[in-house]
Amino acid sequence: MERKLFTALQGDYATKLNDTLSKQGFRRSQNVLYRPSCAECSACLSARIRVADFAPSKSQRRTARRNGDLIRNATAPWASEDQYALFRSYLDGRHAQGGMADMDIFEFAAMIEETPIRSRVIEYKEPAENGAEGDLTAVCLTDVLDDGLSMVYSFYDPSGKRDSLGTYVILDHIRIAQEAGLPYVYLGYWVPGSPKMSYKARFSALEVYQGGAWTSLGSPKDHSPDTHPLSTAPIAEQVARIDLPDGRPIKR
Image (cartoon, rainbow, N blue to C red; front, side):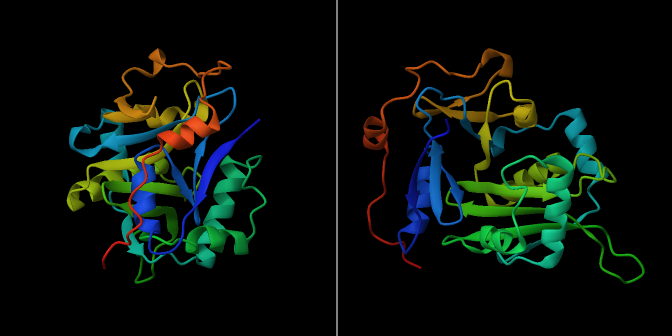
């Protein structure tokens, strides 16, 4: 039975709250921050890459070269029909049975546009041909935190015409963070033993939030899903341990 600890994200306090709780394993979904809090399982571990220590593998360097001609464009969080068409193609090709499979264009627009903090839609397009703009091939909804970039949700062309697009988008976010002097790229949750999550462990300098602290992942084989009945503290204890920022809004 899935259970989450969550809080509303709104008003002048939203940016501080998002920055602070993201450092404690929370993730954003529209105007809500949440963290898994299942009663008898703590397998979901928030993951982030230490940008300064990241070193790409040989296959990641090949992926970067093969996709280096894609045109990157960062825009305000505003949904488009092209984005939704790519999103539908991605879900149908990769996650047809997933929880987002029935999302319509209005729900998609809400996912992209309902953000009370500094967010960007980063699009990747094919090079222009004969003066015409290239096709949209990958998109990532990205939050800009005070200590990094948080990849809220990404999707891409599943046809296979491009090599390892999901990996490339992460590599490019690492590059953006390096250029901006931001120390981390947040990847969402990693679950030991999950085939769908295994790609995250292929990035060097990966940290996971476990036991109230960020620690280096090390070898993925050293981790196993924690599903012991006592693996999760009671909700009251979890809330008491959360560090909250002061209530003063950030000066703009």
